[in-house]
Every structure is written in C-alpha cells, then in structure tokens.
Length: 254
Image (tube, rainbow, N blue to C red):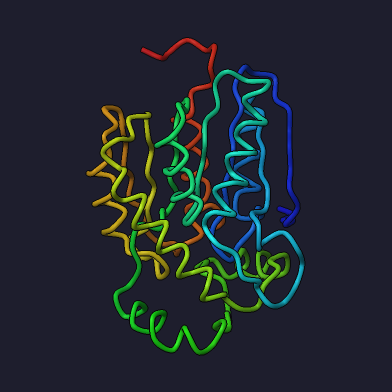
C-alpha cells in the first residue's frame, strides 16, 4: 500500500460518482485506499484536500468552516455536471461537511466514518482557554492503532501540529449540523470505533439516532482508533462501505 496526500479523480465505468471528504488536520490520504476500492467497483471517485490542508507545511494554517463548505459545494457541483447521482463519504470533520451538504442538496447515498459529532469532554476547557493563547498543539502520532499503517500515514501527512482556530471553527460547524440532523433523509451508513481517541463514540451513536433517514445503518468497530479507513479493521470498513454504496443503474439485490 503506497499512501500519498495528493488529490485524485478516477473515472469509473458506472453511472455514479462518489465525493470523499477527509478529516480536520488530515488529508486525502485518509480516504485514498477506500477510493481505490470504490473505483474498482465502477464508481467515479473524487478525493481532494480542503482549504488549509492543501499545502505541504509543518505548521497547520488557520482555516474555517465557511471555506471548507464552499470547497465541498464546488466539488459536488463539478461532479453533478456529469453525474445525476452523487454519493458522499465523509471522515471525521469531513462527516460534518457531508451532513451539511446533505441538508442542502439531494444525495444518492451518504457514508459517515467516525463523524466528528462530539469529542472527549476534557478537551473542551483546553480549546476554549489556553487554546486562545497558543495557536496549535503538537501532534506526536496519528490516531491509528496499527503501527505499520501509522508509520506510513505519518510519512505522507503534511502537518506536525493541530491548529486550534480550525478546531473551534469545526465545533461551530458541529453545533450547526446537529440542529439539522432530523432534516436529513438520504440513506446513510455510519461506522464508528469504540476505541476512538479523537471523537466521542457515543456522540456518533446519538447523531445516528437523530438522523431523519428512514434507511440507515450503524456498525461498531473494535481494535482500531480514529482513522478507521487505515487501521486494523480497514478491510471491514472497505467492505461495509462498498456494500452500502449501490452503484446507480445496478439492480437491487433481493
């Protein structure tokens, strides 16, 4: 597996396109292998780096949710020019952006991977106190339990710190999105690790329950940390997502 943190666009043989949105402080490498699997299934797949995440630098720049939302909408509209049916996969903060998009447009299907719908309570005082004094926190390792995959991902990730201005902006987006969950009715899949150290697993479950989607699935994962697309359960993640994302034009299985 050769990870890279470079945008990708693979034109598939099927009738649908899938937009993949990475997490806060991460990059498109988080969804690279999943995108490759979906491409093999016939999907056209698009992965990109969000504003504030698109330049190789050791310090993570400031960026805010309106910038991310604008970028996501532009990428979605670009796919809509060639595909009537567009599915979206969002990882972590990308899950918030996917939910925000789903509250405004009609998607084919929606996948939320470890969505950032809450975080450990001890982090809130830090972010809203000392977080106004210091611009960022150092990041010693990535939240991947598999040591080999953590080392591979660390070699391609851009940042050695975590920008706290961006975190506070993500929390603003989180508050907004939570108020819209009941309005979102697109078929949705949520995958969440019980051992996630970055987001609150129970917040993902509560968010799932609040979704207005009549067709929705939730799966707990174990033996992995936050970046579930690259961790020890990655094969199961790829399989569950691939099974859920029904390519437009294919007959439904009985």
